[in-house]
Length: 204
Image (tube, rainbow, N blue to C red; front, side):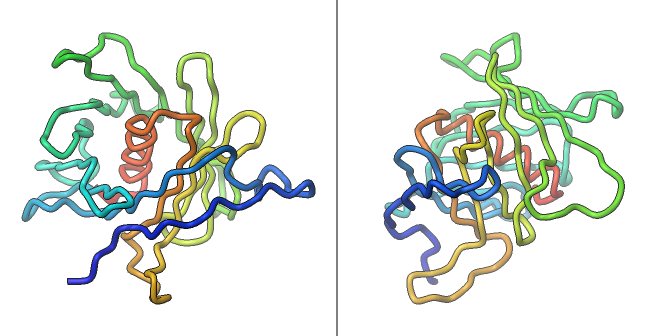
């Protein structure tokens, strides 16, 4: 079976003429591979590999797709975040609760609000607003079924996921993504946001 984990690649250099929608990733990056499937049979979810091919995060959703509560875990099954969809549809969002020493925090660590617009979605269009404490980010749809970027208020790209290309140039399936993430956002938080996006796109 072919491996799907990432190959090391240099980060792109900033260009003075870059616009916010096309800005390169800011600061140093780390690369992951996201497979929008659970490794557990008959289970929805996703599996995240690091650059060495090791599983570092996973979501195993035993319920139906798009359930109102899922759990982001590490390889050994330790829960890192509980992600809940708000009960009332008009709120249109999700909240993430961090787990610390086997206890879930009472207050959400982040909130994601889906933006609704008439007509079809366009490339480089913001589809979600993200609040992490006092920090604000946008999740932007890119070309491809699941490709996206997370952008800070300065227009800098702090995470980018796109369809993965293997080391020999083969474009992998729609459900296999290469994720480049900067140090601006803590890793498990980025994976929690990826999980929310997977729920929005009905992938887990």
